[in-house]
Image (tube, rainbow, N blue to C red):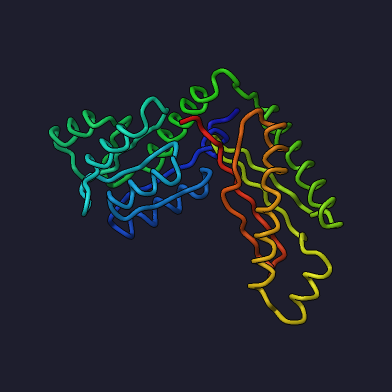
Length: 256
């Protein structure tokens, strides 16, 4: 598996109080990693960590409400033995700041202005290490993830057709380090398409679709368990009636 494929299976969080710098980092991350979360200060970063449990965290040192050092220390206490990479991106270059960051539990210290090549190399190295450590007992070959994704794709399409009488088109499945995304197009039934064309009642269609898929959570999660050998829960149902698209996001259920 190439480095880029390891990184695409990661959830990455960026915590940076400078809006311009944060947006630039997020733009780079979204093109290369799995899911991306961004926070404007340490306190927001801690909330995002607790909610999404990212695999890699990029954090500035000087931030309001909670410093980067305090954020890292809090996360390290909470994550326990869970493999997690923390990368500091800071304008501080003095030895004291770097030592404090190392003591807090970082994996890499990158100074600003950020060298994108250095950042990407670091992200790819950390992503590969995390992937192999988390799944060392069930390490997936390059072909194996595709086989699992194909199995989930077939199961998703079959169950949707069974329940609605209409199978989706262009189903794509992405298996991340701890999440699975299922995206499909042309999923609306004839009745739903007519309702949208006649009344443009997007809210009703979105609501009924969300209720429908959450009602099938057990069936879909059992299907994913059969393919992956690990338990997942349905985290989000994203419906776009205008473009007739759907995305389901499943998060792995971790012990403890």
